[in-house]
Length: 392
Image 1: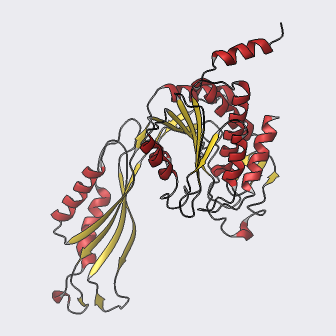
Image 2 (image 1 turned 90 degrees about the vertical axis):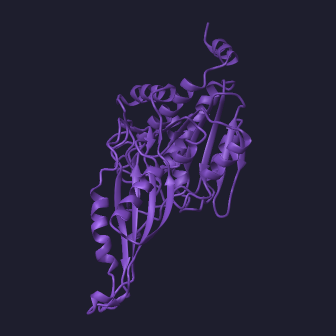
Image 3 (image 1 turned 60 degrees about the horizontal axis):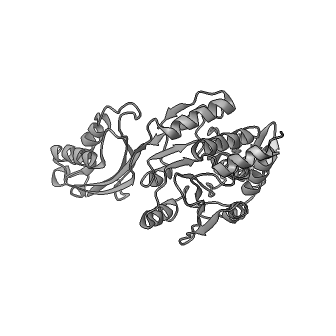
């Protein structure tokens, strides 16, 4: 049964200790399955990171299934019910690191592709896989390496499905049609170091920065829009002082981050933050890091097909959402106008005893197969073959 194949492959992948950036052989397992059904597989590894680009067909539209084989560390082993890298089924749940994020999705991708190709070996368009072992880490040598290479080759993707865990309570209740951007700032506010008993001879940067920090946190940067909430600014770390209790520090370093949607741009946020600091009369330096630009997929062929596929397999009317952190969809969106994230329930991701409902695996594979069928039509050859195979 297809459900057994999906579950068996998920268990095989979970048993590989692919803690980021290690792949631990997961991509080779997948590549072997794909080559058997006519995919041309190309590894684009860099450093310690493994990347796979696999494609079947050379026409348009090009539909890509994207994801990652790497997982986060297991955490305290004594808090797990079982070895995190020995998949265990208990009470209808499949336990193991990566069960939800996102080895079950990878298994469902593969078995959906196998079933689709068996039914439509001469399908129109092209089907591709873009997989990496660098999503949970720095994401420097992973998906972005493949998308940059594809861009240089003039390869553009029409539709992309990322297998990130997106459901909240049950499979199909939520999918992501975009993600917020992430803009970080390492802000150094400068003062004058001095003896704490002689404050008139020093300038305390903590005191100077405090009103500006409060205003940054209270500022309404934009109003958001239909798909994105208003932009937020959050401080994550503050460092100051020499360690001595009687020394006014000479500087304070503040780590902050904007999470923003399409109502703002990085340039506008940078200018607004600097204007605020200037108004407070601060002497400062800033190092900016743009980790992700926001991306958004509006109503169109991909969303319509996804909503229909999910409703047919689960009965859910999926909610479109842009909540959560960043994903590799941000890189793929640079060469693909329609990107969706569709995957299992995310309640246990990155936790001890990560798990997924075992019964959700065949459902997820069925959703993916329906999407392939909707977006990569059967050819005349497939239709004729199907007609000949039907009993007269």
